[in-house]
Length: 524
Ligand code: AHR
Image (cartoon, rainbow, N blue to C red; front, side):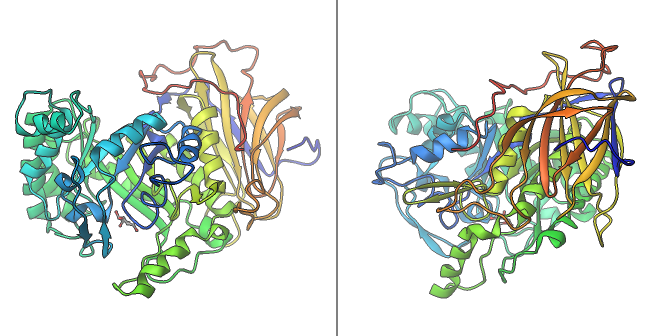
């Protein structure tokens, strides 16, 4: 970024200090791991690896995940969960089971306790998605008993004690089912079957743990949602929706940069449709949205049980797939969720490790993909409240997507602003006039910039630092900043001298946001 001082800017952003400030849930920086391909086995969990601890957890994976300040991790699926029986994954004798979702044998050596301990190791809350496919309301609520009731409460809590965990695991987040509307899901349901099962399951879970945060599989579809919310809405805290905007299940042909970014407004459309359905059922302010599976790229898993179909899943681990398109789509997705933080209270990148995730794990180490760095920048540098703003921008060629995307945030503790600025143009810089309350920004600004050498740049085993964030300072006069092509910049913006901290709009609520420090340490 530099100051060009020249002609009229192509874009402009004016940040509203007097507008509302929406507290953003820390859970917008959530994660997801599924028993699919090498996310767990061969990913985070590798007993016997020289890089693993005595529990089998890869220590380099834990270290990298902690850089993302993960708030919550959803597990064990995804499609996997809809024919998973949790009792197979607890206690000293684990029985392998044939996973009908992914057509492989799961050893069950990574189960509930291992998941809870791994979450503690990375500093995240566990979030368990239950089996509403082949499972029952009782099996789901028994899992809550096993995890959360104190010793002596009954069969399941006492089994946990017998398995060596006298203290409850205190799992706060529970979801009833995963995508049970889809015929691809084991035990798929029609809307009325679904509403009935969720209502009964929610009732039973609430009778075990009335303080649990309870979610359920949803979609922005009235036929699915009206019976669900009419029956179970009173028991629910949030609706789980999913989004993949480059669907590659059967054919692995990742969209190019411009095609991928032309889909950047998709998340907003999904949120709006779901928000309106929540409103139509009178549950605004009561039930929120959890985008608890999202990624630009859908996972590649062609149909079939043969060796070729299973081997095709290795194509998810091709690091050249994850370029600046993934980084900028990720920034745009997070900006969208943060702008809608009044109704979007959780978002979980799907998945976190291997497959399409931000962290690639190989036998000798890890690769922080481009998306990893965006997640780290957002989770560690942005303020805990999103402000409103007015902006104008040219559109991306051939798409109704603005070249500029941005998100202003406020640090309540210091009253300082940090702004994310995204230039989606594949080759050109973007000049932008930046102002606060109508006053042009001026001064030396601290900035962290992720740009890479080109739109198709990526990190790989032999080149782990081809795309890394750069910590820099920029001189800004009369508000003019020039953003590098295909870049994400997080910039600390001084308040205008006439404004003092705390004069922002009143709509600030206590948020569960925390920032343990803001010093940026580029990925090693
Ligand atoms: O491609 C992975 C799958 O995507 C997840 O298991 C499921 O929840 C979603 O359909």
